[in-house]
Amino acid sequence: MTAPIETIIDDFAFLDDWEDKYRYVIELGRDLPPLPDSEKTTANKVNGCVSQVWLVTEASDDADPVVTFRGDSDAHIVRGLVAIMIAALSGRRASEIETFDAEELLKSLGLEENLTPQRSNGLRAMIARMKTDARAAAEAA
Image 1 (cartoon, helix red, strand yellow):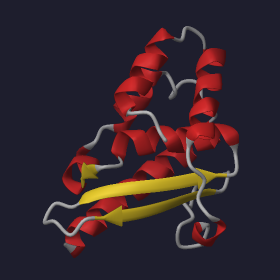
Image 2 (tube, rainbow, N blue to C red; image 1 turned 60 degrees about the vertical axis):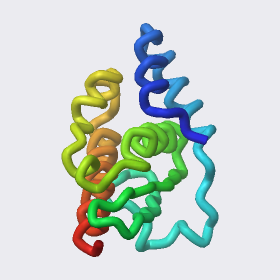
Image 3 (cartoon, helix red, strand yellow; image 1 turned 45 degrees about the vertical axis):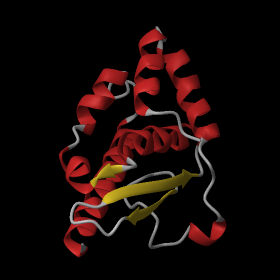
Image 4 (cartoon, one colour; image 1 turned 90 degrees about the vertical axis):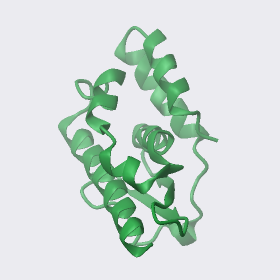
């Protein structure tokens, strides 16, 4: 089970150096429930990530639906990044997801300046996919 985003933010605040943060991100990834192979489909694959990343989106039938995400990756650090974004966005209303400032979250965690450009681009692609899926859920409601 993924820790709440508030817990993750608090934990990051106690970690002084990037090595400790890096290990914590990998630990978060280990705690992320894996997706079954049947959900690791082309439709669920996030384009723009160097590693394989899959994202499954489900939404309630409300006018402003509650959107939940499940995800997985074949890379340890990326799995942790998936876990962070699921903790931040899953279970929120579509309107909240669309306006969520993911860049600010990444800066506050110290991830922006420590990720490789490829990982940063992949993370942005995943965030964009989550926002697009939330928008599509709201339009379908």
